[in-house]
Image (cartoon, rainbow over all chains, first blue to last red; front, side):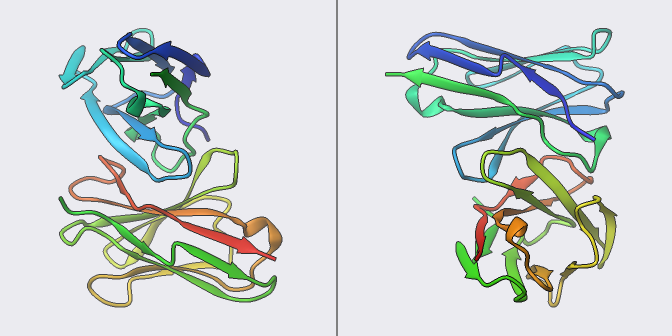
Length: 109
Length: 114
């Protein structure tokens, strides 16, 4: 089975702009997590939002959750070139599943 | 900051050979995982391990694969008879409190089967 589906598949922005990526999931959630993967490297856990939360912030990251629509969004504000990576959502309830294709974010200096 | 480590960073082996990939999870973590990522493809779950036994595994994790925690620190993935299609990045991850919860990933081992 597959984890959430992210969109857009690719996003290219200028440094300093905000980046928004979305995730839709199929099963119910206890927690939804967002991860980042730099090319060829392991995933890095960014932020976790619980099913009873609607919004959560961590530094330049803002995550929202709409359980009625089974969707989440990740906003990166004031993007930097170092934010260039692929971003994935992950439903803890879905357990042993493959990460999706992710959103590939390119931030141009 | 504690981190998951993996060795070797790159392993080249011939088809049919056995390989052991090693991981040192974060010391107080309880759940351990292996994932693989074939070049250009998704990160795929292989197996989760808790309390010295496999808790879940995917269809990929067949009889050719095994995992072991031989001591208090290492967590290994063994592939008994490698195939060309086993060429991939293999990531180890660990979790502290709850399964699949805030996984910490290692840097990966690139396995090349020739």
